[in-house]
Image (cartoon, rainbow, N blue to C red; front, side, top):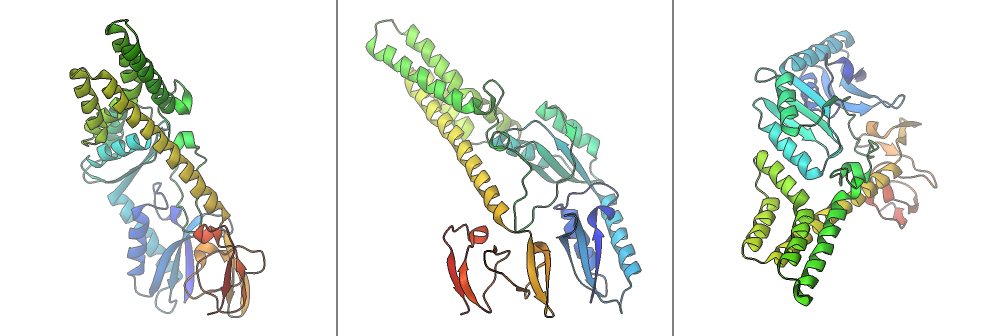
Length: 357
């Protein structure tokens, strides 16, 4: 068997992300050709670019024939499937979900992915729609400025690639009044006005209008983002808990229970903001853990040891791990014994004893 490596970007006339479904379609098409044993996407150890690696039998198919077949398959797929890559200002994960739902409802859209950092990727059937239609619909629905963006590189299975987004960009962006902490500050202000209103209502003789005015401020700060998200979800065809919270708070106000309605909004808004904070911390922890994983592995093949990219390690390879080195991939011990830091694989911070069983 021989290997043929082709940069996946050479196989498609237009830009296609390395994690796009067209890559899998291309691999399936190439693997169906006589003489091809397997094909997969790997990261080049030399320049970190991604290539389609094809294992084939040269006695059945030549390198030139295989290359032409791959190029033809890529051009055919590009003629059938189109891709849109745009970016908008960083947003909240729930609004990103609402935008995804809106895009998915456009006829001809096969897949829509919107990340909280504002990156948008859409795959569509060229026979049913086109890029202009999708862009116009997205522009009209979001009212955000759209910018072109370079297709993203696939995240490898052994490490997490960081796009440089911060917690504020990825999970907690909600306006610019107080920057990235706007929602949390609004929730806090809701609690402050709720407390002041309750104290005035319970222990003062200022009449009902003064505490009512304070409760209205609590309603504003507690319901600001909840109302915005409820509107976004309804526009995208979703009916979720945000709308129920607004309905409950409105019902409490109708019954004259302003303090109870403000308390409901405060609890929901503070929980929502803390959820974003917790998810941001978890995201950063996962990214930090992923950075611990090594990018290369020392593999022994045919009695010769060589360093290769971890993406090129296959089942059955013998990986040599020397003292103080990190484990590049999961496996079992066939020789030797030691204590191993397996944090890149399991997250455990305490070294674990490993030996041949």
